[in-house]
Length: 262
Length: 276
Image 1 (cartoon, chains in turn red, purple):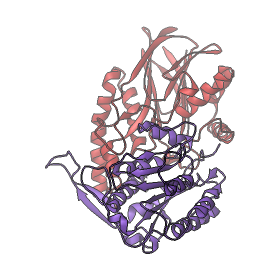
Image 2 (tube, chains in turn brown, blue; image 1 turned 30 degrees about the vertical axis):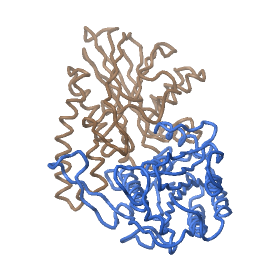
Image 3 (cartoon, helix red, strand yellow; image 1 turned 180 degrees about the vertical axis):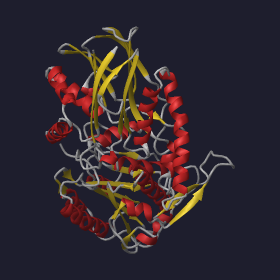
Image 4 (cartoon, chains in turn yellow, red; image 1 turned 60 degrees about the vertical axis):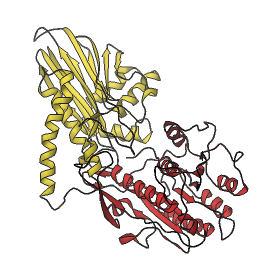
């Protein structure tokens, strides 16, 4: 099978490019062919330390080993995280910026992110239909578009369902934390379906996903909403600024990956 | 809609914590697993709050100044409640709070066992219990600090003032200055003033009541009347803490607070939305 994909992203207003804590994979727009194609987006939690690198590691872990199951994803990412964290802490210890007291609790709690991983499969390299699967934790979302309509939304189906405490995948097993409240163990939810040639799938972090569902609720046709995925970088930046200005898009990191099945 | 402004490094907000340091703060407080003086319980809760704020705002590049914080002590005199390098300062950006505690204690976390790794516990505020309760003057100082802040940050999430006391004001009626404080406003809404009254006995605290109707005396009713209503997101947070809080309106007031309600008061009273 073949798919073309685009990626759009923008940090929240008032922050630097380096402050962007969403992540997406693959890293650039393009075309892919194969029997199993993978895509992902993730959103590092604002209030946890190193959440951007953890979000990056989750999406990379998902796409880099297509035969790895969803159940193995978090374990594999945590193993690699421990290695990266040890290297990071070693570098900090030998630098002129050793870890400070206020970083210790955050490092002990681990990094947190929402995540949606998506996979297209086909029996043949060139095929006009096949299966798709998606796994998600929190409010990073997948939308399935066919023709002029949206025929599936996962794991959130209504804009009103977003809240301030989404489930988060943690870089370590949750432990007891009296002041911040207990974090429960989060499981990835899964959804499956079939794709046809011409179908489009969107993967988005919460700001875009919420805007998208709100517009659908207001009766805006999906084909109008997806135009933005074809914008160039400057057009996308202007579009984001305008939506933030009219307050229809939250001032948060924005990420959307569009995948079209050929 | 009020209380919805984004809080960012470009648009920070401030917390002002008023602490009663009168002689009676040396009396024991109700609740808790071991006997404790009110002054000790309060500074432990404030140090815990400052620490948690710094941890919450810590990113890879340091602590972000989403908040500026003042601690105003009132007893024998009205002074900055910070000890150590921040002594004498009123509003301090959170990065400076994080960088300049009085000291860092080391403690093995409870339940970690003898082999547990000690963690560093910062201390900025130390217990003081001496003198009267000049609450009117303390609120006037808070008014001056907040007014100056709003002149520079007119679009901020409204400043939050938290007053912790165990007694009646000894320098006159604090209500007029409390009302004036609550009338200060940013473009996002009026300043929030919350009050907490500490208990010496083990009677149950009355937390975030709808009004002062169930309060036992005129002073408690005055403190309640001086308090702002909790914004909707704080009501939601109070409910998550398991508190029976009215959806129609809850005063930011706690009466007969024990050790755990002081921590809860600071936690709920400093909840904000839209941290960016």
